[in-house]
Length: 387
Image (tube, rainbow, N blue to C red):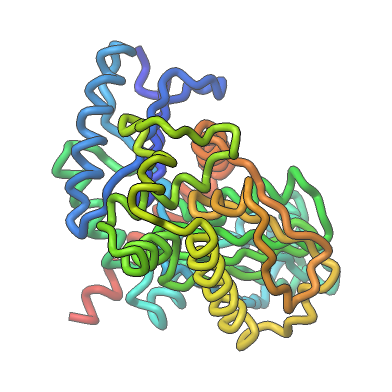
């Protein structure tokens, strides 16, 4: 069997791991996911990954050694860069583009040496006075070209730490993608609104992604997420974190699924537990609401420092991520300072999240090879002189 027959992908979330294996026809051959109790050393994450890889290898009769990784961090950020190049003679766009990518990587590693480039997103270019909103692969550049990029970065220490831990498990990371960008980009194309925002509430991270005409405008993240809601519940009702998490998950279900019976196997606190502990549903709702409103206020405060809030007018807002499930089947009235046309919950599935990442990998495989191959040269060069 060829080593290219199967591709393995892991969504390495703080509170949930998703693992899927696909063939080159995009058919899902194996999938498994699990909620994970986060620890700083990722011990629980890699225990699950080790056992899951073994099960997948046994079922597929195939040795898994390469992984496509989806990753996020509260320190993700975007940098807008415009690069211009003057030519002495005519040249094909693709050749010029490669040299500009080299220059882009050199600049990022020189001025942002604590970060790794995860995505170098083409925004638009100007060739001899003519504007192109998409890559003009067959265009000839006569004398002048300017390209606008939106670069998505993650901390270098985080990337190195994760790679080392995968290597210890004999797993090689083929490529790393920012999951917030991958997901929101895919959803933006499907929904096809002129202006659209995605608010992702994660475990200890909340991110806002804004798109105009299906193009990423910016990503902003803050280190506060749904786990902070759990800690608030624990403190207010004087219960431990595990019980508080179960209580929070009660609101991820519709009222038709509430039960007075204990159901510890599903990790959901029962209504009988609520009565015994004398927990007020109204107070619980207020605790959740206040913290969610605070998260939204904080991230939009950070946004307002960089972008005029009027930019969001007449746009749609979709809530995504595990933490956003709190707002799915419950009526919370959040303050809307940005005058969105609508605020809706976008239902995601584990399979959909993984497949988005795999499709992105296939669509960008050739461009990634060019970037990473050249990037290694400059990375070694700057590391040498920085020691």
